[in-house]
Length: 234
Image 1 (cartoon, helix red, strand yellow):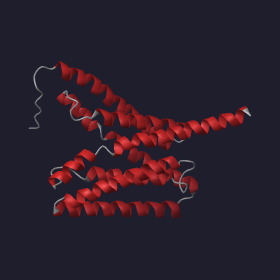
Image 2: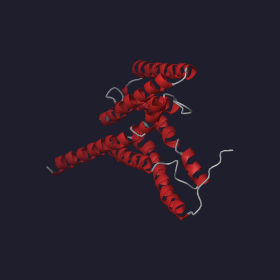
Image 3: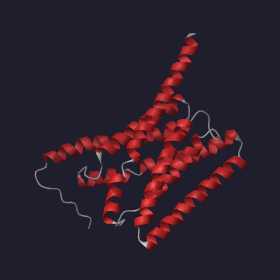
Image 4: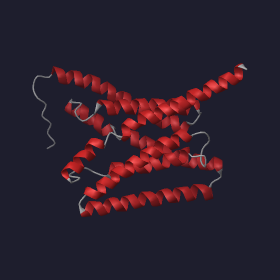
């Protein structure tokens, strides 16, 4: 009786962590909305790059495939969060293509096609070449590497914050959402004994904590500064 209750509690905690990760990830998915409001308002993509959305789409597709029953066991909440993320990225990419100049439009269409072709190759290769155990390792390593590289992308922002001594370019709620999501999936991966989930999210949590620490430190410094901040990119 005690053992069965422990199993149920364990499953509840694991699922709760996964659901929380899905909820907190929503904050990351909606973060580009102000950018695309500006794009739609101005009728131009200006100097914005569409590559981050292409890369995030590929990452979401790989991770969604890893969480599916075809690749891993009891990881469906990984599939749900990344499927939602993929939908958001497709919407952003569609708006970017609509408002981009012809040359950039064609490049984005080319990149988008490359993502879908690559994902199709991944599915066919993983299903036809590998058995279930090998398939999980193969796709798991790909998803882990993809997640780590995505979580490492804020390193540029961290360096910029330190250089400018300003948190202007590091939104607090974006860093907070990243921290909460990473911590949730860190717990989910550990409860599910899945290193392909808890390792990259552990790294993501550490980077998010670093961002939050810098935000607290430099926002305090900014409030103490009397003169206006002038940033030069020359």
